[in-house]
Image 1: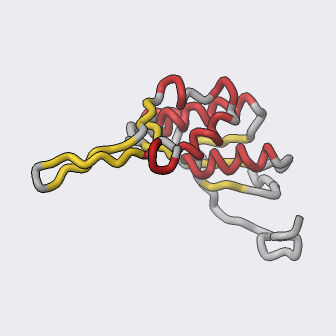
Image 2 (image 1 turned 90 degrees about the vertical axis):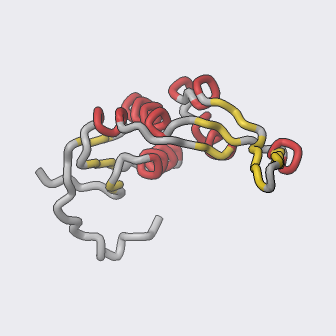
Length: 141
């Protein structure tokens, strides 16, 4: 069944779901579609390191974000070469951290938050065509 929307986001990955969240915060509705099922999206294990700024954006999900409670904060890394360890101290150098938080966990948070917010998420759907994208309304606020 054809659907009309101002913003259609193809792909319920981290970028698509976060975009739908940010659009909603700006008062714009969108539809997110993905050919995968919700179960496939949430159960495909993927690694993840999030920069502190991304964790701060996820904080905007409120109780839905588990990045700070389930994720692990890292204030630096150690690189080894020539038989010696060399610590890169993020907190000291840039007053920032990174968070070990697997992508599939961030996706669970984003999906739960978007559904609770009334987001139109469609799983197991394939976009067959886009019509009207060439109209003079595109790109104008």
